[in-house]
Image (cartoon, rainbow, N blue to C red):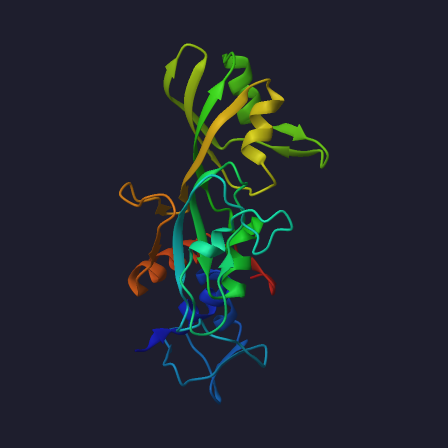
Length: 254
C-alpha cells in the first residue's frame, strides 16, 4: 500500500503533516533518487531522505497494548521488595519487549499503555505531544471555588517548583466530604494528580486513569486484563498524536 510522503514523515515525529509539506516544498525531501514533490506516494520498499538523511519509516510490526492496571502493582520490571509488577500481567512478545508509556503509582489503577517500539513510547511521553490524561479521583476534604480556581490556574509543586495544573476539572458526584472528580492534565509528572490535590489540603482516596489521548479504558475490561489494539486502532491513535504535533520538529520551525 502506498501513502503520501508527508504522512510518512509525520509519523516518524520529524515534523507535523504541515511541516512535512513545507520540507517537500523547500526541496529537502527525496524519494529514492529523485526530488520529491507534493502528491508523491511511497511504498514500503521506497526510501525517503530528508536533508540527505534516510528516515526510518513507521514500524510495520508496531504493537500497542492497553492494560487495566490493578492497585497493588508497580510499573517497574523488578522490585527489591518483591512487589507484584504489571509486566507479570502481559503476554510475551516474539521479539523485543514491552515498554511502558509512563507510569502509574502502586495505589493508582486504570489505563496503562505499553508498546513494542521505544521511539513511539518516547513520543507519547514527550511534553511536546501535549497528550491529555483523564483521571477519576475520589477526594476527601473541603472543596470550594477558591481551591478549584487554584487547581486550574496552576500551583508550583515541590521539589521541582514547576507549575502544574488541571486542564479541566469536573465534579461528578459527592456524598458528605467525599467527592468524585474527573480531571484532565497533559503532563505526566510523578504523582502529579495526588500532589495537586494535596497542595489545596485535599486527600485522594481513590485514583484511576480512564483516558490517554483518544484511547479510553473499556468499561468491560476487568482489572488485571489487557487489550491488544488492532492495526486500525493503532493507526488512528498514532495519527491523532502526529496531527497534534507542532511545526517545530528537529528541523526547527518550517
